[in-house]
Length: 122
Image (cartoon, rainbow, N blue to C red):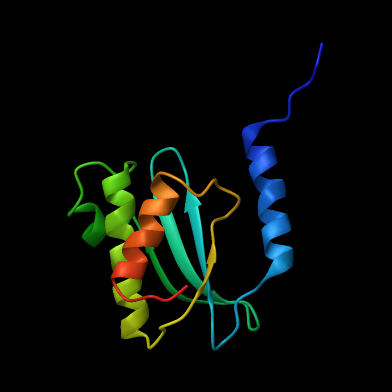
């Protein structure tokens, strides 16, 4: 019988490979995305000092109030718009996109496209 590695273990391994290739700096921080079964989280991180500059998630009251569901593509797109607006308010224009080991489709792609449309460059 073949033992199959779990999806979460495969995602964690992919994320480590991605993180070895790039990191966020003060000039160009990292936009890290995490998706659970029920919510999505986005952070803009400066890895040189290990500090989160801006964050947004579907758990927060002001974001959750605007959404019908917190785990669909529409919620991801709204979260992308929110994180881009908060980043621009903090003076961040360019970021490095960290998809967190998730496949670039569906919710992750919707968040990235919405962030680009709202003014973030990556």
